[in-house]
Image 1 (cartoon, rainbow, N blue to C red):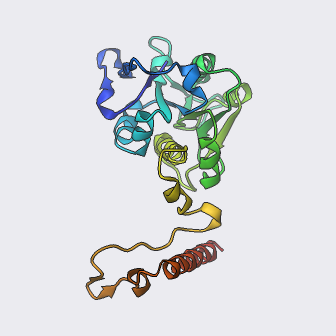
Image 2 (image 1 turned 120 degrees about the vertical axis):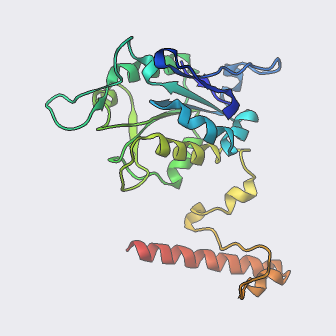
Image 3 (image 1 turned 60 degrees about the vertical axis):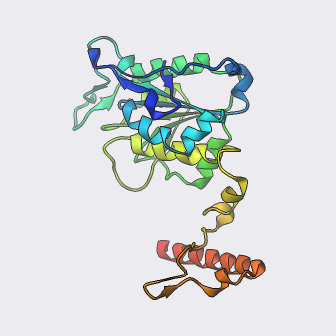
Length: 265
């Protein structure tokens, strides 16, 4: 099993045998059991060839604070460590062709361990990062945040053995219409977008005013100084008239949404 990450300082890499692990965190005396806390938090499991990529980002972000507050857990599982001694996590595809394919055995082993330890009847999503999947959007982030468990599988090379989707309810998501070296960057994006929407991770007021809420985009923001290189802050924002400021922000938000949709067309 992978280790749950609280902050970047708990990461270590073991050179012997090439194993990559996260140092276990020591539970506090007042920590509730997993079953007691399960319904109150989002459990995230990440399956990856490169677990060390996650520690710095998760440990220094809203995700890390959500973990510290008991709103989420993040466990990273090393795909290489799940392989048989001397075996690879990838192999050449049957039928020939370029590239390598992630093997189904180590993936299934990790998934079986995660699911065996999970609470019964939990709401879960198993998501594979894949350039061929639907593009990830804000609605996906909301749905993932409402789950009890989010399992992210980082795709690599020419993809994974297709039999995994026959054995588990795997859904694919893409970060956009482009190709990356691996699925770790999309997984980090999905993770961050979902955890920040968990209740308590950020202020409800901030979350309600963000882009993509109610189909609109965030309004333009300004701060000090009021004039910079001849460019002034819109006078309404300095007026102190809260009703006028709110109306101005709503209008600018709508204008941004219209311009964005027009650019897409």
